[in-house]
Length: 392
Image (tube, rainbow, N blue to C red; front, top):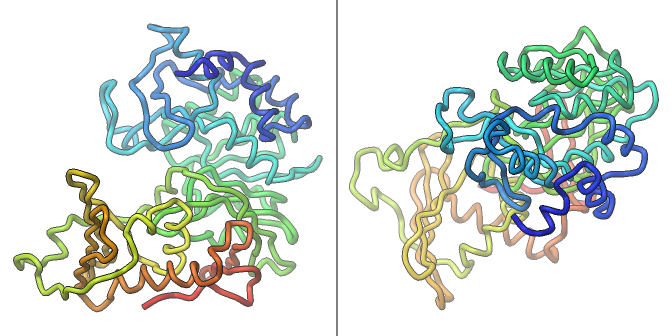
């Protein structure tokens, strides 16, 4: 960890850093001070990094309290569970499944949520309970409900909140269903990423209320969206506010079949049609570029097979295992070999989505928005009457 991280290894140091970055506003400072992060962090954690999704080796408070505290009061996410609790041992698991989120993201989202005195808030994804604790301190216990699917995680959140002297309602259940008993809510906030906005959230949010959630297609490039619910509760619309990288809502996770499933027992190239492209695969790989492509190419995901000297194959797959594409990248080339197979020409779709964005001057996140209804969603550019075109 850097010297800057060491200087931030205290509540005061972390608060100063968050204030300087504009994430922690003065009106949230009392809650930051009254609800210490350390009360919501277990003995064993896997510290993350500020600008990515990788984790470092496990740290135990009982074995190295200085390193544990340094991680807690650094602006980094802390993984607290792997593989839905099935992972054993101190090594890294396969997939992080619960965490204490990066403080800068926590307080940036709380600013986006724009809570007012007396507001009732529904949180989806209790995690360690820290976010619910901050909301409960600001709004009062009775005005905050947090829903957590994992019973062990929910139990830990209750214990942490009790230790902090707080008592918002912690519900064990499927976050897609919200919690109708406490509705209507003025604000709904999700601390897990979504492929779709659940209809129950629209129904349980008061007219004019806010839904704030990490949102992104399967292809990647998740972003935070801030939606305002319509007067009749049938829809919600609003703009994206910032980039994010949260764990997926468990019930919206999708399978990633192995490559062999796409060949259907045939030898390579398994009926794939050869072609070429002038679009360099790395140009499609940025976080925001993935977001744009995912908006236009639904039901698809990618993997990279890397070789020496920076060369790699970008594979694009359809979730139904019927279509795939590959694009080979080598440094110094201006034309790249492509193979495509199946009813969808996935590389053509990826390229069309990217060129749609490029032809419009590569607009930034502030120009994109989303409209959600009970039947689905539409991503748009500049306004709801200009939807991002679906390829294919």
